[in-house]
Length: 483
Ligand SMILES: Cc1cc2nc3c(=O)[nH]c(=O)nc-3n(C[C@H](O)[C@H](O)[C@H](O)COP(=O)(O)OP(=O)(O)OC[C@H]3O[C@@H](n4cnc5c(N)ncnc54)[C@H](O)[C@@H]3O)c2cc1C
Image (cartoon, rainbow, N blue to C red; front, side, top):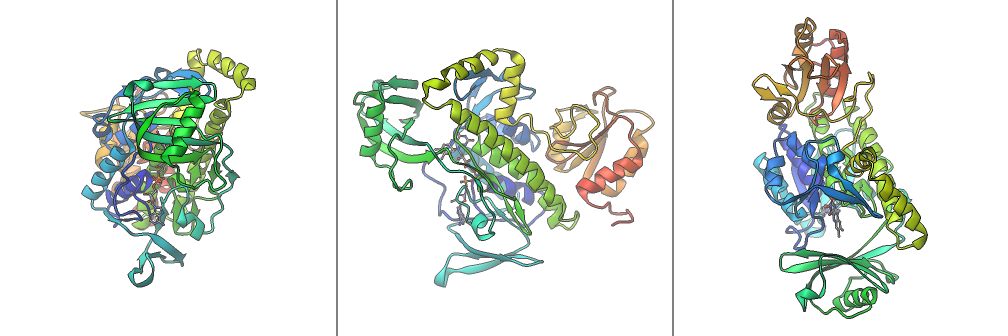
């Protein structure tokens, strides 16, 4: 439900695995305005594992640093990633590319279809779409609520959304300046506050605090109201000739109590909302979808038990909590409060150390995401995204992108053949490959999930341990006794 980044990415992930997928979207057409303007290293890493990163990288410039809101500039080269930069790309372009990709893979996107009701039983979910004479009920095996921060799915499923309400509000305006030279790029500070200016082709995006939000926070922002806020912040009049999009957003931070309720799942903003610091929402939405897609496909196709979906909750709820923690920290540090100045200075000082910069950058981009593994061996890849590995005439990333399945990597040696043999019952879901010696950094076998994370690493693997890991993450093998 919902054709934003989460819904479109999830649709592609499902359709690529042969699951009949329909995206229902309330709005009749894609929005005429653009919310986000970036993809971070984590998103590019994920897209790389589908062979898609190049398509997105072709759409905009990359920038090698970012800020931890509150002033610490972070050199992204300090991160452990193949993409140490931020890609400047409009969210509308991200959605356009994802929609095309999902449709190419066979997903259907039905716009102008609003979810109004929902119930489920043991076998199916029944989604009511539209109302009155035009209403219809769709029966589906699973329903993913990717319908944004005010998720109808979340509400209808009765999933609580605890957290903190918005305390501070920000106004955003995509406007045309009467005099294009009246405001330059970056932050302009005045006696009443500051205005952040981002030039866009044909207009500028202005962002300023909403010092006096109305009682009804959903009250539409008008051009005179926005003009007033800009002038008040700058202490002078800067004529705004025309508005393309005006909006208000707050710094609420909420995380759904559970990301799964039976056959209903939540992803993206429907699962978590957070202060806007770090420009991360699109990225978190893609991350959820990449985690959920392969699991839901295995379950929907009857290959794995539905308990696999509980790991989606565990992993992405934990990631959501981390997202809220770091965006809330940034929101506090970004407050216009002089008492915070020494803290900001201290942080900026610490961020000059490469290790600290790397830690902060990996935290705000989620590059350091590590999912829990049942039998950690202390290997640096345990639960983490595995970097690319050269394979004979191939590479790990190309293999993941080509198959969309799991990969069992082994170093050459006497254990390799028995492990590959042990994986035969999963050959429809997992490909085996042998790496050059030393490529696994101390492990002799590594099992990767389709999202590129290491599910199992072992310095001394046995066929039995491999089978246990394979059935845990991919369901029973075809010829195994449990099948
Ligand atoms: C001003 C602004 C600037 C932002 N800038 C950035 C940025 O720079 N970088 C970044 O990463 N993030 C940014 N974000 C956040 C980002 O836009 C969101 O986090 C992201 O869109 C979430 O994706 P999603 O797919 O979960 O939800 P959405 O993109 O909100 O998509 C949900 C979809 O569900 C549909 N829907 C809702 N209800 C129903 C229903 N009942 N039935 C059917 N369909 C329904 C909606 O129409 C919508 O299309 C910004 C947000 C705002 C507001």
